[in-house]
Image (cartoon, rainbow, N blue to C red; front, top):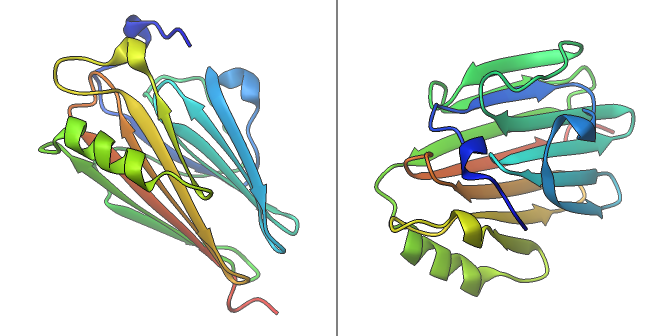
Length: 182
């Protein structure tokens, strides 16, 4: 997997939330993961900046993504957009009481080498660790970690990203709650 270092921006990243899927040709996708439960269909794309996460529940499609500012993105069905680390959390309730919540953290003091080793130990059926060895630096490895948990009424996805220029570890925790939907 070759990634150009100059594609990795040291400027802050932006969070964008859509009520629709987005087109894959807008991103450099290094890995794709799909999984389903009785009520959820989920697609995760690991990109050179972080991730694109699409969750489908019945006829509702929610896409969250983290990308660098200036990334060409569609304007249609845009629900929220802001630069990280401005907001620490975002919540959206869809018409049928589907609740979406995402929480962000940028840990600038994280020991990336230690965190990477701990995440390697956690890898299993519901988690993936994607390494970017060509981007690793003296300050630590470049990687994305994705972990999911689900029940009939709830989906939780946690991601952790380390890349050159990010100045720390970006963690997102996304929850979709269907408990109030019949």
